[in-house]
Image (cartoon, rainbow, N blue to C red; front, side, top):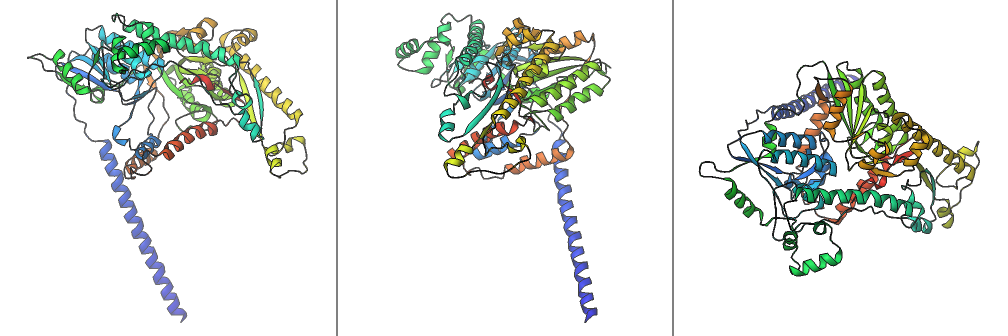
Length: 620
């Protein structure tokens, strides 16, 4: 009997080994097959792009203008699939890539015009639009016309359209120019009703992050400060449109920024037709649907000997050389991008995480060919500790003898300014929001809420610090201790800026207190050195490092082959999700809003709960 059991045991063991072996062979075969498919797809011979004579470059900005594209935006693909917008092929357009393509088309004899398709443009910052607009103006100097079309023009879309020679709007469309605003929700009454006690620690009269938890409305300090820079941005918008459309007699500042009475009266003259109103006040030049717009364009541009051709931006851009070309020089300038909140830890590609970002800075520091580093920042701030750790790497770069220049994007405030202050030079755009030199910390306790429903807490501890928790009241002496820590953090901020900007702490304090400034104000106050864009910063870095010949390299986070494979596989797998699931559902829209807000909260992860962050630096 024992022999039989031993035989059966060995038989099944061998059988299971065989099955397992076959399973592994099949799985590995499937894996290799998938890998081969992906490798083939990555290495497919691209069709060579031919540009015909008399071609118009058609830039269909259906998506977002960004500083740097993300390697693989899987969350966006999932969102598109769930909301049924996958077919729109929403893209991310890099600012420098757009500028480079327009500049190349300017000198391409086969490109005879430019068409801006703006209906799908979702978002872009003013500094990005201005830089692209400058490239369009240079394009026009070659004598080539620029046309813009949209079914409706948002404020962002119209700003870019203003650089065109001719603006077309659909007959049932609108031009929506509403100006800028900073609006926030205030929770004091709700917290009082729920018996939740917020504990606030801050320094800076204008550091208004905590106001929603302690007030029912915006303080007068915040209103005055916000109104100052909002008016500057809006006046800059108006001035830019008037300058670009200076050949339109009917266009005036009132056309862009009418009072409600003026708007009502002018709409009555056109029987409430928004498109006719836009044309009557000079905002647009023509009313036509897209097919007619293309037909009119064809009539203007083509001749018997040269029919009009249109080439898509993506096709044309793919035929161009890389933005940064290499000559083999031993002198290099590294460009490193950082966008999003500043956090501790590693990055998820939507934040500036100290460990991940410092890895990029260390690469530049250890590379002997890199003589200068340009850091392009677009951040409202975040963790004070993470900001200081990143600043230490900038100091290490300088100690190594490398020039460091910071180029500010749409926002480089609070923690972003903490990082930037130690650079050799700071370049901001006129519309950059910066400063916000202040600090805060906060947490809430719910002891009163628990007491109200009959729950009480009691116990013993070894020290007063052991009793700190969300379910019990905060000891007043501990509150004073926390405030002392915050005040020390503010003094440290002043010292960091004073050392970096060659100012006294008193001089910094006068322009600090958490107040937000535009790039124009920051230049006058000594917080930045020059107004310009990323190219300005690169030129400055070359000059400071005494480089006459150099290559430009972009240092980006490395993605492993494994992660590339996973991203590719998941991206393709998402297409099999049923698009009808929760499609256009209020539930999914609410989920996406909640997900965005919760992500913001979870990113605030400073180990000491000290934050240097500018909430009002995102305009509506």
